[in-house]
Image (tube, rainbow, N blue to C red):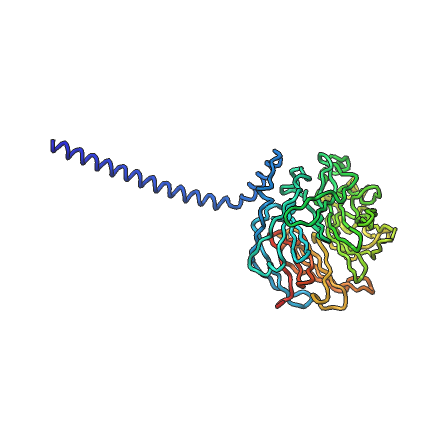
Length: 473
């Protein structure tokens, strides 16, 4: 009996040891698995944005409200880097505040897209997918801060899914004035037919109810026969314009021609124009025609001049100006697509290309009855917003301006991902001094904040809101 008990105890000990060994081995496997999982998560962290974009699109396609998923969240910024450079022989700092919450880009060369404005001591930021946010200007002097989200009815107005993902369709500018907030956007009138239109709402920090402010009477269809002239031609939503300013009692905005080139010379449509709307009587008129894709607008009170920037085709980006008179009935013509210092994309044989029958791109504007640009760039620099900066920012008797540029950060050409500075002589009406300052990111938008004497920029390659200021300021 004693021998049997000893055998049983021995067997139990062996069994316990065996179980312990199995347990230890399983624990080790679990640890290894956890390690593999952590490694896997690290490797796939960069896919988070794409996964979120796909979920976002699927929800929209199923008409599921996504407001609680994205639009209710604020946007956090943290200081990442500081650049120092000389501009017009003066020292300036560029401080970048970077966010990981901005994920939707409207151009393949960008990592995110957004537009900014300043009003009532608040900086406003609108993502290209329609999220409206704001933060006190004083917060930009902290190392990190948050932009608070404002709810709106944008998702009830804009239904098509391309607007809410990484496509070229989306918000094109934000303007906050007189306690109203305006957003320009690419409107789908009906399935696959688009124009550049504008929404307006009373400024409310809890909820903004947007309604139509201006909508084009016509739209361009993706299936238009014009796009069959060349195998690579199609409706390009990047070429939609959308910049907005208010000059005295007139609302002024730009429109592109969506690569339907001849429309820019026709007076019976809104495409390829700079348009003025009287805010009192709502009357509309074209200030200028013959535009490809006007990306920047600025009105100089000192000069009584309207400045605009415009994307050319392959080469031929332009800075234009016009002596502005709200009562002037003459419509200025800048020549596109009949005149341009650029050339069509994908040119192999100019003489055989059908596009040149309707858009010959003659190299002189003035000799063909059009207005010459103030400045043009060959090759293109990816021109964007233009702003005037006063003497307390740049010491000068003349008027000085900053222009943002975009382009490809990996295939850098001179002028791309830079600031273009120029000095304008108002007597001679020409540029007398200019320079490029590389800042290594696409400048999508830019504003001057007079109270702080700073320039704010939205940088698309680094998901950053940046502050440009004199060194030591």
